[in-house]
Length: 415
Image (cartoon, rainbow, N blue to C red; front, side):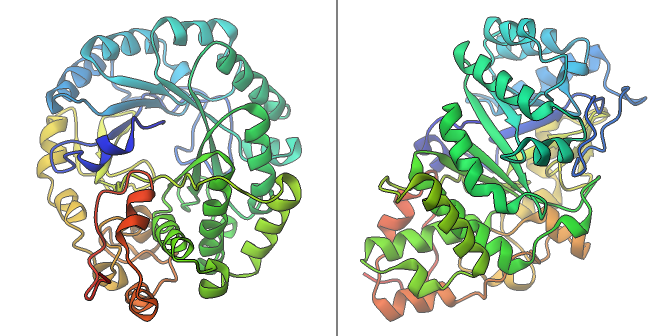
């Protein structure tokens, strides 16, 4: 959900606590999305945390200490859980910033929106996976859900709620990304969370893009962030490298397209974007916190099993038998992830700390949570050679990318 300022994130103690905890309160959901991480179902599964266990989990999470992580109630559809409002109320009493990620179903009614306001929900994310009704409805598996999603977003904004749009990028919808930017502008939404597909759950590999296409998407998203929209990515940490590099070249009077030569998909996407919205004149609002699966991110499943993220089915503990604070701070794999102890290209990359690759993708496709991200085409050292070739200073570019915490470890940084 919307983060609370870059300065906070630059100083966030990632070794001690996550910035974001995603809690899959239930797997139940009325939708049937083809890329669903949760493979959601209509009824709760046996083993779902009871009300008493859920309250105890909230108390345990408070043990992370102030400032507390942002707590995202997700699913499935969190509104399918009968005690969701009492859980939201308790979380707010404990001092959590609370976000909801509901499905656009009949449960997301006017009364539910009113309750979000009354309970002080800090943010709501709504998924829109295409700029056309037929695209979104096909992906979500329910006719008419696109139209309803737009109605819900407008009502939430009118009610004073902070709304972000989530879009899962896949082969079915990648060419509609420029139209999504236009749609967000029309809706008045200024935060866009873009999910780079992970082939887990219902998400099949034929929906995935090639490494070069993901690179082109990252280049496009940086350009899209110049239209007054804060752009963040999930499972696309290579976006941070692209954003820093493009901004560095711009600040030194160089054309990133001429130097970096992004591919055909980028050219198509950015041409469509400019056709729709004209040339961009704003400062880029590319945003990142330097988090990754297991570093600043933690996911709790419906049955209390803890994972580095919702897209990485690599269990690191259970809240039924362990304290959530202890799991995050002491699990061996989580500690290695936070220390950037990676293998392959990710282990020697200049960007291993602020990027580090998608741990979920490395695990799903390579079977190793510490392996290299197969979706990233970058060859370590290219950025360092670029800096040396043009005599560039990195500091300003890094500082201008919202939320970046670390200076890049160049061997011979320009003065």
